[in-house]
Length: 137
Length: 221
Image 1: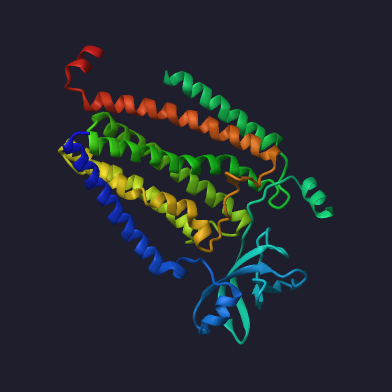
Image 2: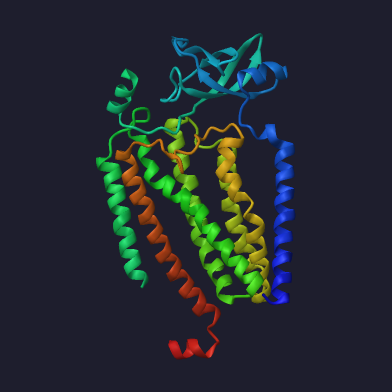
């Protein structure tokens, strides 16, 4: 390789390394704030003030959904701690028990008051007949 | 050559889409709304692949000063921007019925938005110089700087908690049932050929435009 090309290669390599290093430093320092939501354990540990609007995410505990009119009450869990949630409104189609959920709202007096609910879905795609078979196994 | 590639691409894409939309089974959780996967996943894959292609061209342009490499970046960037927009837009449409929201500032969605802005930034930077050689070089440097975003997009769903689900297809296998995976893979191949042919068309036009005062173009036209 010609010397001049070697120099250009080193120069661009340095630019790449320095800029990527900078980006990764920023990402590391922001790390937990880049999470979209708190898990129940993180939220209980973090001691959230009741006036802060936060996002809480986890799994809807099996058998915990109770509906009464437009109100929905359920428990959200990360399999370590669980938090009771109350929500008034229409839940997304994929909101169901044993399924991921992200909620926007306030935590006060031990209850999470959700203003909005988003359903998470997992990375598995299969026809309904197959999922029944899988449950049998 | 590109009309043949375009024909192969669009035919394959149509086979994949018709199979996926009309014949593939419903999903056990999402019902029919998952079918937008046949647009969303191919578009998202090529949104990143085009950037990888541009970064190889950028390296060639910076180190070896290959003029053609810069022309290829300039012609690929609008296609990349278009396909990234399609990926974001189809994801939003998919998000409304399944997540219950069309936009969340989660790491995957935000880093893909940054990719879209990078494409636009690359084009704008190139357009803002009257000295085209200088524009080529600075554009190539910006492309290389933006490469850091690609592994971030890829790993965002593993590093941070996101609304977006983790990857379904990896080197260790796929969590998509074969009856849905086949049309998806066909759509990916089809979109690939379509984009390659669009890339050839757009770079031909750009090369002629850039070299319009050269003798070979005058002879060619």
